[in-house]
Length: 190
Image: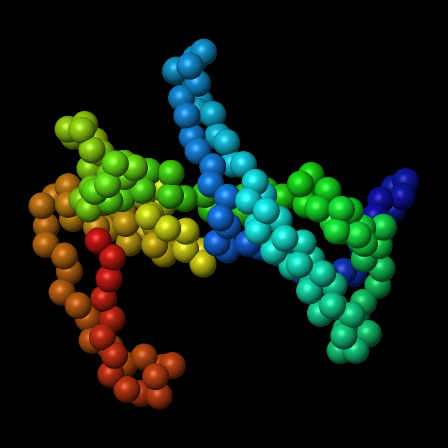
């Protein structure tokens, strides 16, 4: 908090509610008024009623979690959305005003061989020679985790496709979480 020329630090913690597998679908389209400009992004957040219900329930469960005795020594007043947001309508209005992407949009150019797929299994755009898409947009379904590792795997495989190089040989390593057992580790995607 800034008051005049003094800064005071207030302690706080946060609980984020995320929806890892929303049913709502968005889309990207060219800007017909200016095709050279940026595309138009239509996220359509919370269009599916189940997405809205699940996010609303997530807010309620986060509040229930923080209300447990273990948090008594840490908990202060709820800052966001705040104690005024109690009814389903209140929480839904807050969600509609505040929900946003977590910088992990994906699946807009999904891989496959059906009429809705944009790229094939070698990341080549259907019907356009010499063009590939190499990012998280080629994922056919939303992942339930950070997109960094899958995107790195997609890029590594794309480099192999472009160079006509074979897929790397699987590695066999001892993984700490398996109690010392040998496990097979390899890219399992493309």
